[in-house]
Amino acid sequence: NKLFILLLLTKDFDQLPVRIQRMKMTLMQYSFMPIYVPCKILNTADTLSRCQMDNMEEFTFYEELELYANHKLREILITNSKVEEIVSHQQEDEVCRLDLCIRRMA
Image (spheres, rainbow, N blue to C red):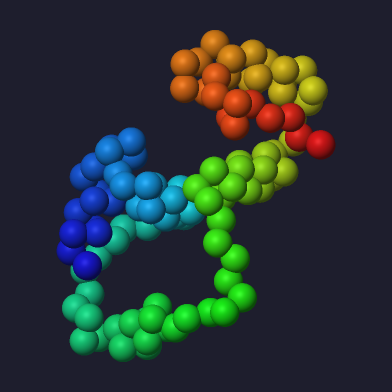
């Protein structure tokens, strides 16, 4: 809807509602430009979005964030010294000092 597009284009990430932050994090890996399409044109998408799934797992925001971060970490190749440097910089950062931000890969 138009409000959603407005949120994506104009608000800073930290000002977005948590659900929209999650969606925006998922979309960050793509280059896109959201546009408004009237609902009467999107019958199939509307039907699928209303479909209930019985076996759908629900992740908390932090579980989803950790899954996303681990996925991204597996995509890049870095040395142990670089990991230590990243951890060191995270420990200096006020926000990144949170326990859930500093985890070592197994």
